[in-house]
Length: 482
Figure 1 (cartoon, rainbow, N blue to C red):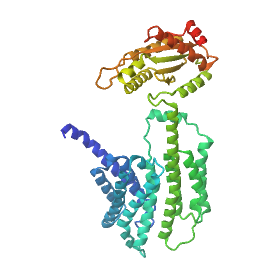
Figure 2: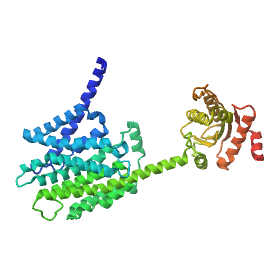
Figure 3: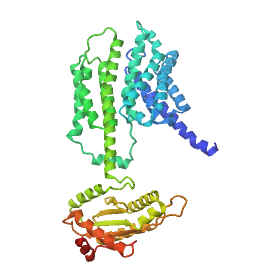
């Protein structure tokens, strides 16, 4: 490693160490503030947050990242007044669970880690159980420090607390989306229009959580389940993980404050253990439904794309092009209409390309041609593959001269292509283009324009190819004769 590289990597490594240390210290302090019984914390987010951070940002999980985490745990314990031996023991127990969870999560494939499969939540649950068991085994001996407490009680409380923290916090980090650019975010916010259908599930969830706390009793913990399932069917996976986290935290806080008015239980730790286990199981249902819903939506998008887009060239397929063009022509924008043009495009002598170089080379030519044409089109232009080597383009809001100029740019873009296939000479191709233009919305819509553009294309091919023909009276006569 040269000196310049070392100078470049050092600030990056320091930033990673600082990030890990700050995250662990702050989340550990939050957990320490919720210790109603000795060292037992009501909420301990540090382990789940650190595990999720190491999984989604592997660059932070280097040796110095782990060292930073250890030092941050020890610093948080020292600040809270933990004895040195207790501090070391607690840190070791925390790290035992994180190491076990990290090893297992890294063995899962990327889709499972991001909860992108129907069974992903169950796999995540198994990882969380193993991590919680590892932490509980390492830390259950500390239960002896609580008067009249047995190691098995400490194990149960530690296990259920860790499991609940992992199950409600970890999915938020695993499904965390990439933060969009500022301009994109502002655009999305400007276009966001809340509706009753998008607001009501959250309102129902809030009311059900409040109702569970106000009514109380053994069954109160299940009150938010219908609302959480409603949210799972309405929102994306990441928003659902946030809602599960927030509702779980609200109910956990209410339980700690003894607002649920459960039947009196002599052993406070046993009561808290039972509540946390129930809260964990409650979160699994909405998370699983949200995962399945996300997978279903993804599959539907793929199916819709497969129907709409041509599999080879990735432009509109014939039916999608015809439908979208027909819809566009049936709803012209008032005040913005300057005409419409339809272009029919045919690759010249394409059969000779297939016969001489093979169909694979012919496919490569078609892909190159469509890429060259797509790069010249405007955002709202519709470009579709009609069949074989024939394409069509609908140009809304365009004058006749501009349509011809654009068609000439398309012809030049294809003429400049040099498609390299195998070890042979590059393939050179050209296109013929027929253009038809209307200054007013055509009464017959696309059905009226396509035959005219096709007749203009036929004339371009008949008069030498690699040229553009604007539909004239002879084209109209030809189209009428057909």
